[in-house]
Image 1 (spheres, rainbow, N blue to C red):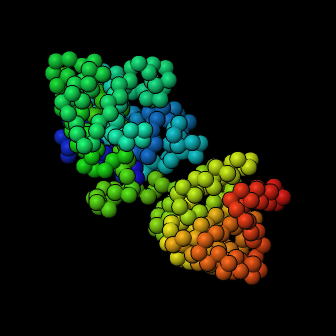
Image 2: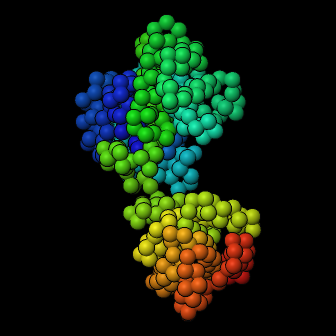
Image 3: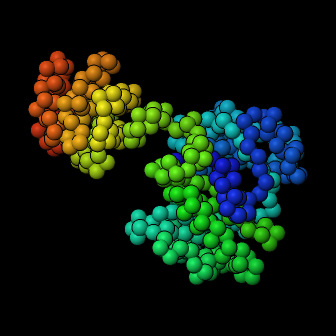
Length: 398
């Protein structure tokens, strides 16, 4: 789960990290009031969307859209003008794609006199199963660009969770950022605070870009945070920060049925039980010359209602030209899956090819339900057969 910058900064501030004063705003009037309550005379008006590259983004509706979604304002009047430009309009960045995201809220912060910018983040390192702290002297830039152009300017510090953040980790961080004196000590302290926040909140990523030096102090000027969704039951306060307007509507609907759904760019819809089987299904679709339209895992104990909901969510995607259902019935019974498929297909008046591969518990009953449904459902014997059939059916229907 992702959250907005102002929410991330609030959480980091509670863990002691230095964050400039700022106030979120949902309207132009609130933005103006927020600026008036901050010291000034320089403010920053920041569009709040779940995407990076806001400063270099453009607004679809504005002829002067190149001004971006992060702007300096030297007067209350400029705060108001910028707020009117942003709210309700669509910001397109390198991470949103051409569709962009509508700006529904702003963050008004105090301006900061920046001396030097740094990059700092924490992620889970899959290769080691540990937490990695990544730091660079090249703040304000995409870390991917830095990694490509000047990888020697990136320092990675891997932390064993059984050991925790130790003094030598802090020294490595300060050394990687090339800091000395009091700034060196600040960086060591900040690194410990960041690690503690990461572990306490069950984060999957924290990114501070830039971490800035201002008047001899380190400040968190921008922050992104994402969380392990499987751990949110431990953090109801964080779960309450979820902004569903920033998420794909189909993914929101899927979460209501406890379905794992992610929209992709292909044309073959997939419904599978089990994440590993879903990944294998998507791979074999690509191996046969097509592309999956989604990842959808209905889980091991889905009901007929859950399967019906999953089927309908897939079909809401206009890019879907065919559907492959691949079910291995262990806890999940094949006849329950078949009932759900037939019910959903009849409900939505199925108009695209459907290939179903069932195996496992009650497989014969499941196949009988499909065969007697009166629907044009193509059965498959195994995964390879299913992939070949759905690709062929889509090509035939084109």
